[in-house]
Image (cartoon, rainbow, N blue to C red):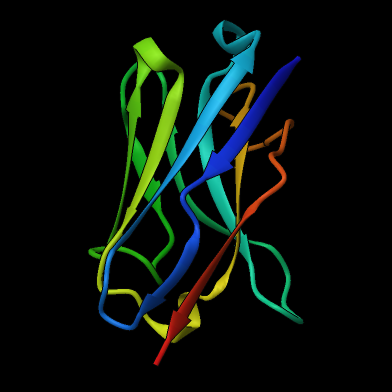
Length: 119
């Protein structure tokens, strides 16, 4: 079992930056990669970004390309999401999750961290 724990959320003005962290504990060697999702009030959870532990290959949702950067520190079993040029529509609870394989599925989820962008 793997337990992701998010941190770094908060309130930020539009146009500002914020960095989220996700520390994974447990059987992290059994995971292929990590992903970030978000869920805004009244909306479905949506994919934000993904990174593989071994290759570092990344994927992004179109809505965040060019503004968000996902990275990882293998030694710390930690994944980061650097968010720049934030917009009010980025307001959501951000979740970190583990990918057991490269198929695009995710299994273990963190509790989430709130990001609020004021206009």
